[in-house]
Length: 177
Image (cartoon, rainbow, N blue to C red):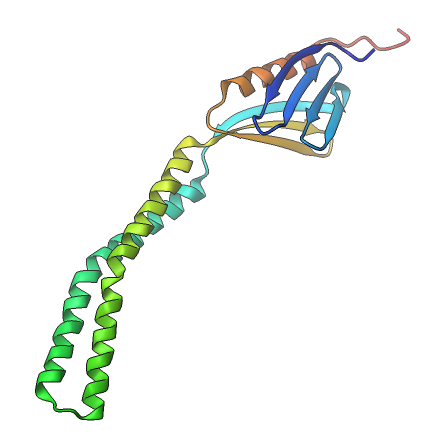
């Protein structure tokens, strides 16, 4: 007996999980995997947020703030040094080199503020992905696990996991008894 289809979950990317009375089947774009329920030890579903994304976002925001705060004062300081060296010296090669170096540093300092804006945008994106999180269905076997993550809090995956758990808990008839 092949078993009747009880429920299925579509990942939206062409992959789907299907629960039959006697097995769980993963249909992918170019692959298919079938696991008998008798080999399945447990099922777990959980909504999780990745703390690494939050940590990176905080770090990028701190770096962006540092760049934004340093940009203006560093730029004006380099311009002041450049003008002082230019005013006090003639056309000596060392003074001309210092004027050019201070001018280049001032132009680099001017780039710190746009860089701070880019870092802030990256941090905001990481915060959004942290907030969205993901729901993961984990099927545990005797010696292995298979995890199926889906972005965001997904109630349909919770319902699918409930159906799998009900099938695992259902009494099985043993052939020959």
